[in-house]
Length: 91
Image (cartoon, rainbow, N blue to C red; front, side, top):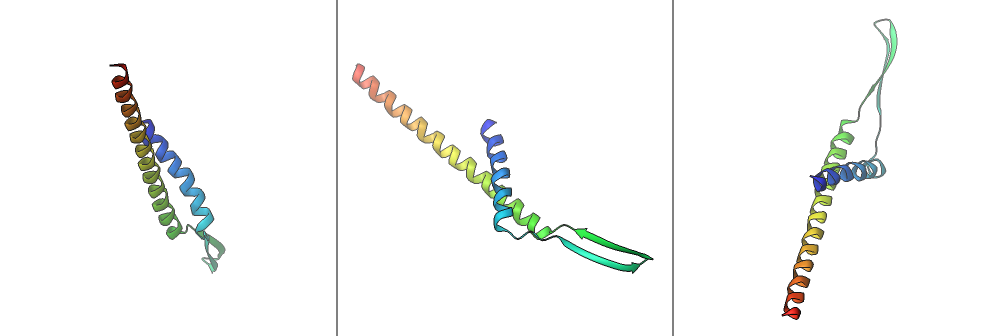
């Protein structure tokens, strides 16, 4: 639970930071002049940026989870190896 939560949170933070640094976020504005008697500026969201940023966040979350799992496995293998060696020395 802790590993999955922190990998999602870390992926969200690092993914969004990297998305704003490397992807070009551009606000999309449309000006409607005299449409219905009112001049308006409509701001839309850049859906390509949102899609790419969400893929980056998911990728970073999976990457963090895999690295964390690999480090945990290496720690367990080292602990088991040291435990077996200490039992052999004591006997």
